[in-house]
Length: 298
Length: 278
Image (tube, rainbow over all chains, first blue to last red):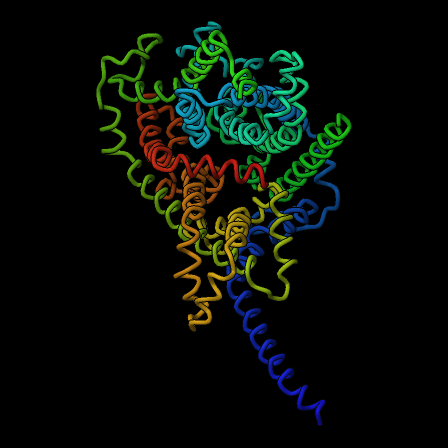
C-alpha cells in the first residue's frame, strides 16, 4: 500500500515528463526537418549520386548505362585531363606559398595598434568580398598589352603560355590575402605576450622572436589556411573562365574547366562526374599529406 | 610594461611599417581605381598610361549599359537571387540551429554529423547531379531552380547552433512558464537575441549569392535569366568595348561596397569566427 502510494505520483510526473519529451522531440524535428530535407535533396543526395554517376555513361534524356571503371580509364588516357591536372597543380604550387606569405607578412605588420591600423586592415579586406568575375574583368585589361602590367613585359600576360598561370595566381592572391591576414591576425592577438617578452629580455632580435617564438605558435593556423587555400585552388574556375577560357592552347585549362566543358558543353555527364570524384580524391589526398607534413614538423 | 613597449618597433621600424603598408594598400586599391576610371572613359580604346588619368571623363558607357542593354534586368535577377536566398537561409538555419542547440529529438546526432561531413565534400562533386535534378524538374531558367538548391547551408546551421547554444536556458524557461508557445518563443526571444549573428550571416549569404558565378551560369541559360556576374562575363566574351564592360562591373560593385561600408565589422568578425572555430 505504501509502495503504490509512493509510486503513483512518481509515475504521473514520469508520464508528464515523457509527454513533454515527446512534444519536444516533435518540435525539434519540425524545426530541423525543412533544412535537413533540403540538405538531403540538394547536397547529400547529389554527392552520392555524383559518385555513382562516375561509373555510368549518361547524357540528358538518355538512360544511364553502367560502364564500371571506363570513365576513370578514359581519364587516365586523356591528355586533356593530364594537362588540366598539371595546370591545376602548378597553379596551386605557385599560389599557396605566395598567398600564405603575403597574409602572414601583412598580419605581422598590422598586428600592433597604431594610428591608421584600422584603415589598413579594412583596405585589405575589400578584395575578399569582391566578386572574382569583377576582378577578372579589370585584371584582364591590366595584364593585356595595353594595360600597365602588360606594358611592363612588353606584351600580354594572358596570351603567353608561360605567364598566364602566374597572372591568374596574382589575381587570386590579390583577392584572397585579406582573408588569410584576418585569420592569422586573430591568432596573433590571442598569443600571450609573456613569451615574446621573455625572448626579448634574453636578447632575441625581431627575426629570432618571429622564427622561434611566434611562428611555432602559428602552426595550426597556417595548416588551417593551407588546407582551405589548397581546396580553393583545386577548384579554381571563375577567374579562368572569364580571363582566359583555359587558353592559350589549354595553358591555363584547369580541372573544373574540364569538368564544366565535359558536363555542360558536351553533356557527357558520366565522365564529368568521374572528374568530380577525381577532384574530391585529390583534395583528400593533399589534405592528408599536409597533415602528415605538419605533424612530422612538430 | 616596459618590456611590452620594447616589443613595439622603434622610429625607423615604424616608418618602414607604414611604407610597406602604404605600398600594399595602393596595390590593393589600384584595380578598383582602374575599374572606375576606365568605365568613365568616353571612348573604348585607350592606351596606357593615358587611360589611367582621371580625364577626360564621360558617362557614355553607363548610358549605354543602363539604357538599352540587359544590365537592369540582370541587376533585378541578382537582387531576387540574393535577397530571397538570404531571408530563407536565415530562417531555415536559425530554426535548425535552435533545435540542434536546445532540443532533444531522435536522430539529432546523425543529422548533425551528416551536415558536418558534407562540408568536406567539394561542391563540384554534387554539381552534375544537382543540374540533372533541377533540369528534370523543369528548373532551368527559373528563379526557384536558381534559389532552392542553395538553401541548405550547413555552415549557417553550425554558426546558428553555436550562437544559440551559448544563450542561457533560463531565458526560454521563463517564457515557457508564462505559457508562451514554442513558435512564439522562437520569434520573440530567440530571433531578437540572434541579431548580431543574423547580421553577420545575412551579409555573408548576400555577398555569396551576389558574387556567385558557376551555378547561375549553369541554371540561367537564357539572356533574361542571367545574374550580373554571368551577364558581365558574357559581355566580356562578346568583345563589348572595355568601358562598357567595366561600367557594368562598377554597377555590380556598388552593393558590395555598400555592404562593406555598413557591415565591415560584422564581416571581419564572421571571418575570424568561422576561421578559428571551423
